[in-house]
Image 1 (cartoon, rainbow, N blue to C red):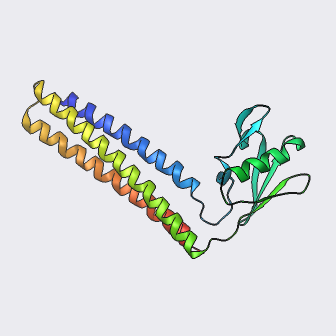
Image 2 (tube, rainbow, N blue to C red; image 1 turned 180 degrees about the vertical axis):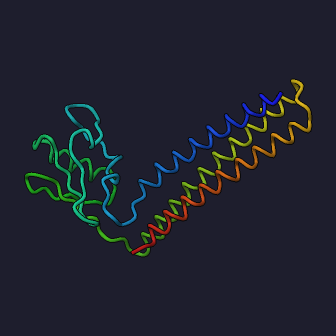
Length: 187
């Protein structure tokens, strides 16, 4: 009957890992004042009739901590890429020099830093809720296994292991949030 505990733990761990991966992706989108190619990851543009990620039509690089360079593979796409960046509501204003798009990333104001920090915290809370839901699912699995013959002591042991796993993943979320917050607040 240890199989039921192992199965519940494995399923919970898988769900918790997905919550961490999602949080990591969302935190990458929260810019910290430094130019980074990943800032444009969510930008999609009309490429011959279909919405296409910017990375599939251009090279995106940084030259320094404040500048992103977007070099399209087809010069005819410069205006389309610029429109896609503006429409993405990232607060970035691309400048077209005929060859590449130059995007100057403005330094963050204190108010904007606080706002971004709150956004990161909200994403963290969403990840914590997902982790707690995974804990609930695992505990429900253990309760149903009890009905199938799992002893009460084994159920309690399994629930303790699930709680330990939950605590470990919530601590990882906190570590990620603290690192991102320090990054946002660093001038």
